[in-house]
Image (cartoon, rainbow, N blue to C red; front, side, top):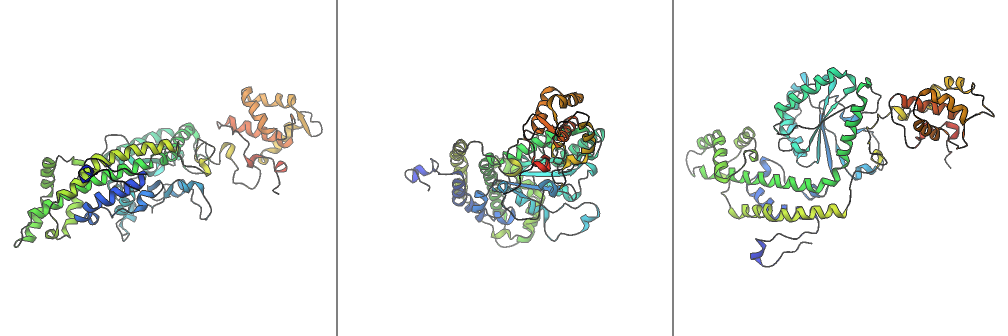
Length: 476
């Protein structure tokens, strides 16, 4: 599957040729990066070794947020097992609610932030959910966000339940959220925040409907495009891991070099751990390492306490040279292959379920609102107002139970909707296409007029739940 080019001398200069990006990443990791990680105990300090599944898996979305911020409703979790084409394209990972208030005193029994950090290295998108109605960033939530350091490019923020507060208060909440995030997330770019109500219930305060719909559609498109960038994301993650592994090797070998061989080992260990910040600065100068590539100082000091520094290994240039060769040559070759695969698989996106036949996504135009109202009800939603529509219907001189288009139009134009819109409503309501409306079709037309007047969009095709009961096809 992989072919080496030329002699041993040429191997050092020319990159390997790979068949696929995934196979190339696996090969490079196992042959060039993994030996460096194992030699300097990278897995004990930072992250377990990568497996084939880490390179072959489909895109993943990680949801993080405090209790009652709407994570499970966002996913629309249903306890059932059935074929789902959406999950053939992406995996969605729910997480336990982040503790706040008095609940933070309860011990989880495991390092929650470390678990999320492990996932963060492997997922394509991290969605942080906040409750606009009761905005709060607890100490544990703050620790979690800090644990996501170096993965800011994957993070998106959702300000959920924004329909529960008025516009002026929403502006204050948004400002407070950005101010709080600015203190925790150290990034030159502003994190993208999506504002809306991400569940299937009608809006409590509909004043910002257009804003919510636009935000929801943007988030939907961001998630839908993940398969297109999955290979590039894995490539970038391997680069970040390689850079960290190099820095880690420099740290470990430097500590080993400073340790005495016989006496005073414990005192020297304490001294080195305490002065680790100075060691960072020295290595930064000697090896031209960016400050952002170093691991968290406090975390590294804590981890070193349990280590025997005398068992660390000295620097092995060949291991570093292999990683440098990977970063300088092989990665560039894989980057070309990424573009080739994108060309061969045009427009790979999430498919199935709510992702099919719409650009608006599962949140667009308010599930359960507008033309979607009554979608989960057993009763025909139009029946609620049908008595009032019937009174109008029988004033229009129906013949054989139907009113003509001319008579129906006299009533419909009272809505002051444009003729183009009324024409679309007529086509949706005239189910049997006979140019006339019976009482059910007339009630449906008035229901669609109401939908449009309330600011919702009309469907391109009549949804099954809006078809009058007596006109629905009986399954064979």
